[in-house]
Structure formats: structure tokens, C-alpha cells
Image (cartoon, rainbow, N blue to C red; front, side):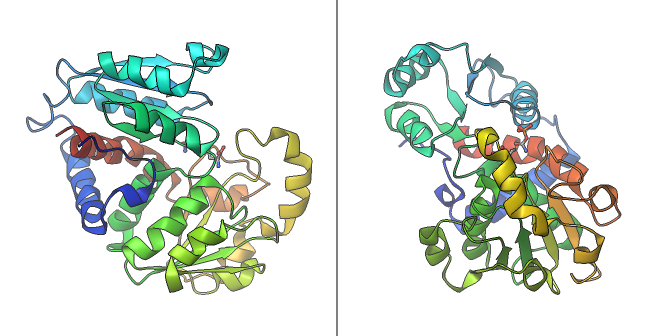
Length: 300
Ligand code: CP
Ligand code: NVA
């Protein structure tokens, strides 16, 4: 059966832990003999309906390291921009290619791609989830602090963001406590919180979320597709900036993460983003290693 990766929950918890360890090993030996041939004579098609720097580059480089080729379709390139259906596109692309990586708006578009594709489909970000980001984020925590099980993680800002909602998925899978500090109207979807059982709580107090946390995370206040709401979002989220005052009440050993792109002076201060607790550059690089491990899992 064709396996897809649309949300983190498409992996079992043990597969997720194994994937993180594999990503750490691949980082040490990025082009070793075990990996050089996996994608030989195979092609990955990237269908991106939104902008990207990190995700596109990391997938294309990963595919090249694995001996494969890739085809990139930017928002205006495919006939989907002129109304061809996702289902027809899935049938066509999967008849020629071996792996589809899709970045889109409504999550149901990437689900439809998977439903009609004969080859694995990876969600490279939808409005609701960013599971590939979580692979790199978890890898980064493991590298700096070891297993995240039992840790206390705080997400501050827009709790309804795709990155935060994938952190909610991760909480129960990996067994850590996630505290989301977000204003009313910007909380993760209640169904996701329920599914996380006791592992996820939500507060409107950023200080309550961050107190004693081992990891503090944020994301942009206005994501792709939310440009028209930008002024309203910036006003609603203004008290939720991650800055040195907020970091001071986290654990002294706390790490700071951000998926990037970051907007200094909005969701995070420049001091925190560039400060000693920030692991954002490792986090970005780990996109490559974690996704290579993901491609191995789906294509191996
Ligand atoms: N973090 C992330 O997904 O970055 P890009 O939008 O640049 O791919
Ligand atoms: N939440 C952000 C993440 C960007 C990588 C967005 O959707 O734009």
C-alpha cells in the first residue's frame, strides 16, 4: 500500500523516533553508500502553490544526494492554476514520477492529491499542518537535549498556525507537555487538542505558557495566505512576542525555535532570535537531513 505523509500521525511514534535517529546519522554521513542510490532513476515532483526557501531547497538537495532528479512546479506553473483538478493532476504526475511533495493552502487539497496518487505524497505545508517542520524541530531538540519525552514545551503566538498544530500532534506521540500561549481566536483546533489528551493545554497568558519550559517556539503572526488579515493579526498578537523578558521565565537551559521566515520585532525580538538559546540555524539545516530520512522511509 502506498504510504503518504500528510500529518505527523501518518507515522507511528516508534517510526518517528527511528526517523529522528536516522536523520541524525545522515547528518554525520550525508552522501554515504547506504543513501547514494535510493532515488536513482526516480523522480520527485514538487508542486508548490505557496512560496518556499527552506522546504524546496532541502527536498531538492535531499533527492540529489539520494541519486534522484526533481521537477519543481511553482504556483503558476501547473494547469491546476488554471483549474485542472487535483485528482486529475495526481493521476498524471504519479504515472510519471515516484514521489510527490506538495505545498498548498487548504489541507484537503493535499489529501486529495494523496487519495488519487499511485505514489507517496508528502505534505510540505498546508494551512493546517507542517509535519516536515516537526521532523527537523524534533531532531534539533534530540541533538541539543536528548529525548523530548517528558519535556515541557511552550508555543507562544498564533496557536492556530500550521506549525503549532503539528506540535500539538507531536505532544501525545512523543509524550511531552505542550503549553500553547495564544489569544482568544488564535487557539489550535479543539479536535487536535482533544486528540492530544492531557499532553496539550492552552492559556491566554504567554507567561503561564513559558514558565519553566525547556523549549520555547513561535511562528509568524501572519502566515502565507493571511496577508489581508495582517493588521488585525498583529494587533491581536502584540502581547505575545517572544523576547528576553519572556525567555527569562523559561528554564535557564531553554532552547528557542522558529521555523523561519522570522519577522524580528513582531513575533520574536532580534535579541532572542540571534541569542545563545536560539537553535534556528540548526533547525533550518535539519530540514535536509530529516526529509532525507523521510524519503528513505517512504521509498525504501
Ligand atoms: N520553514 C519553512 O517551511 O520555510 P520555507 O517556507 O522557506 O520553506
Ligand atoms: N505558518 C507559516 C509557516 C511558514 C513556513 C506560514 O504558513 O506561512
